[in-house]
Length: 115
Image 1: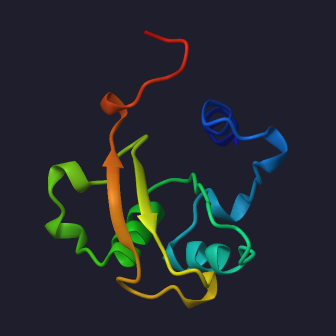
Image 2: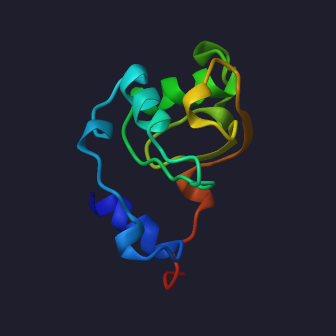
Image 3: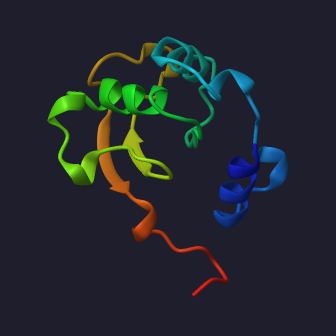
């Protein structure tokens, strides 16, 4: 929860916009897909913060990638962010339905106010 609040604040999200869902913490792929399918259609931006291996499974599933074929720059390691575009209807998530726009690792990220 602390990570979600910190990241949300650094991105300019109001604290009340950060929704804590305990299912995500140690979720597997099925749990994460269920959480995403329950997001209202009016939500056009969702930031999902959780842990591996679930998030990496979700990333490879939606992005149509094979986990063992990921280049080092594509791997979802600790504190990695990935941006994907997904179908407008969250209930229709399927293998390869998303496009990976970018992957950012911790060394590529900056924290506002820290140099």
